[in-house]
Image (cartoon, rainbow, N blue to C red; front, top):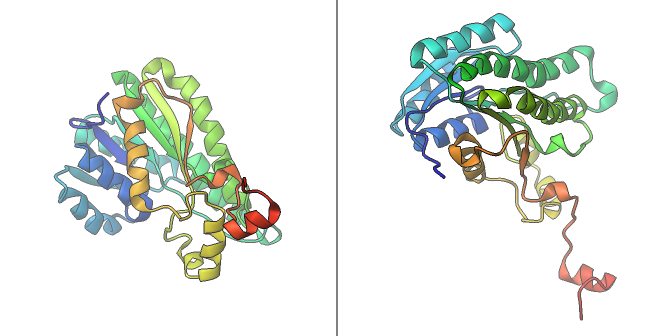
Length: 268
């Protein structure tokens, strides 16, 4: 099975920074041409230059996933530029971090309209073209909150849980059209949305105690899983959620040897 993406065209939404930019670079290194989207077109200038330096053909596309016409126009522009879309990385997203009692009506709409409704209608528009070519790889970007709940993340968790369920439904809908649909669900990775939390040393220590591999995610940790789902190596994988979380979703809490001995957990 090949992880080579030469002659493939990938679309990455929300690609101006963070994980989205990392996804674009990973696909470019594997040989794909990459269309990169952002609500603010100028924010793609530097990122597109970075991806082009890897040898990839790129395109900057303006896209607001909360606007249906913007979605249609953006996908049409990608088709006009490259002639096809083989891979969609449905990455655009946002978060509002608040205690549940403080969440406003507008907060809920912003998060769900971006992360869930937007992801669906981008996938729908792209799938129309993939179906014509009887080939496609749709990768919805979720998170560990697809399967776990955290305080202060009510709307976000609802949107990501919905992403997981949506992925399974779309996989069934479009399997006959040669399209696989999977969800790539990162655990705790440092991004613009959560970087303030990583500035708290105590919080990072608390987090690492709950990750069996003992550390938060690094950008390179997502490259292999992304290539698996984007390439022909995953031709018989669809409807699945691939957690890349260092094991935090197992619900474990790491303990020191001394603590384990005191509880009698270590075989003698």
